[in-house]
Amino acid sequence: MEMTFKQEFFKIYDKKIASGEITFSRSGITKTDFTRICMEPDFVFEKEALEIICTAMKLTRDEHDRLFSSAGY
Image 1: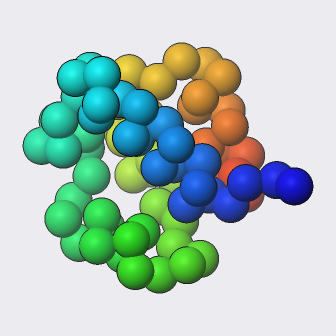
Image 2: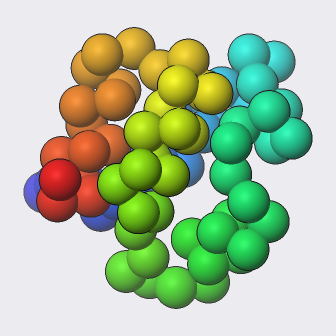
Image 3: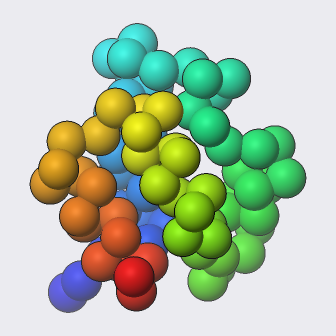
């Protein structure tokens, strides 16, 4: 079964936070968008915002591609 965007995002985000690679303040995510991804089951970041987040979180090409694919981009 394919993971939803939310599941894919938190799998990567939690790993990066736990390892100390990033902090919330350096993730590129606004507080409003973070609340929305937590509360809204089908929330997906806008494409431009997702690109900024991927860069800020220093995602690998594979992580980047998985997030964009699960977002439908």
